[in-house]
Amino acid sequence: MSTLLVLGGARSGKSRYAQQRAEAFDGALAYIATAQARDGEMAERIARHQADRDSRWRTINAPLDLASAIRKAADRHDAILIDCLTLWLSNLIEAEIALSKAFDDLVRTVSACPRPLALVANEVGLGIVPHNALARRFRDEAGRLNQRMADCCNEVVFIAAGLPMQLKATSS
Image 1: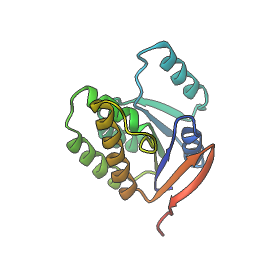
Image 2: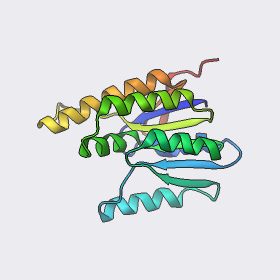
Image 3: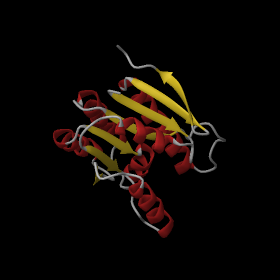
Image 4: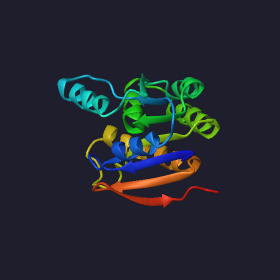
C-alpha cells in the first residue's frame, strides 16, 4: 500500500478494510478524521470508530484543510488513514470553499506523500438521480473527486457487503 483508495456504499466495510490495511504497517499511525459531531448519532459513530483503534493511532481532526493535515501527519507517522473524503466534500460545499482548488491541492499532496496512505470514500453515484440541485451537485462532485483520487492512487478497492474487489492494482 503506497496510496490506496477504498470506495463503497454506506456500511459496506470500507473503513474496517482501510484500517486493517493501515495496521499492517509498524509504527505510529495517523487517523485523519473529516467528520464533525453535529448530532448525537454522529457522535456515537465517531466514538465507535475511535474505540476500534488501538494505542498506535493518533486522531487528527481535519474537516476542511485535509491536504495540510496529511503533510503534517507524514512528518510524524508511519502510515496515514483518511476517513472520509465524502464527508470532507460535504464540509467544503457547506463552507463554500472552491472545490477545484481543494481537489488540486489534495491530489498534489497525496501524490507527494512519502508515507503509506489509505483514503476512504463513499460511492454515491450508483443510485437514482437526486431530486434537488444541491444533492445532484454533491453526487456529481463526489464522482469527480473519486475519479481524481483513483487516478493518483496506486491501488483502488471497491467494497460491497464487506468483500473487497480490486479495481486498480498496485503498480510495481
